[in-house]
Amino acid sequence: MRKELVALKHLFRLACGEWKLLPRFANPCLDVTTPKVHDERTQHLSPEHFRRVLAAAPEKMKPIFALLTATGMRRSELLGCKWKYVDGTRILLPTSKNHEPKEVHLNVFAQQVLASIPQGGPDDLLFPDVTPEAVSMAFHRVCETLSISDIRLHDLRHTFVTWLRQRGVELDVIASQLGHRDLRMTKRYARIASAQVRDAVSGLDSVLAVASASTLVGMTDSLSTNALALKN
Image (tube, rainbow, N blue to C red; front, side):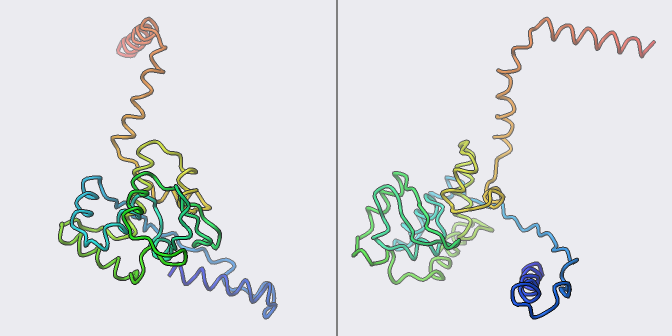
């Protein structure tokens, strides 16, 4: 419903504005509020699950699953990547989902995975003769075999973001790697574990320690006095 309404609003904006097919205020969607959706996925692989997935994956799919997780690239970006786009420690995509050039940085793990793939000519794809559907289906079958439920291929991108956030990497840095213009989109991908929040809050203890013991004692005495006065 939401996608259809957004498309309808866009068409009427064009018809009433740029195309001038209708009077400017004849747009029936002007006062219609687009419903909010709560379809954010929180699923991502743990390091142990990732290890098991790679171990169980078909040989042809191992480097694909590995690179999707290590770089945060979209399936379409990786399968459309040519060898001439690989530039040392980065991949320079001439265009992306946002119709803009995109720089993808490669960690050592990703570089090792690329080195394990037979290299073709400059205009050859990294993974020729591999369809998007085949990759998604292979991932689904591996997860099903391993009893890893409710995980889909795109969640490897979520995994990349979540692992970086859990290491304290800022959202704007992650957004640059993903090619996101809006940090809100990146935030949807990032999942912070409860334990990490707990540890972060506990980390303030060293700062709060500047409050002297005498101050704390004074506060305790004051609270005790007030409590006694209320009781009487």
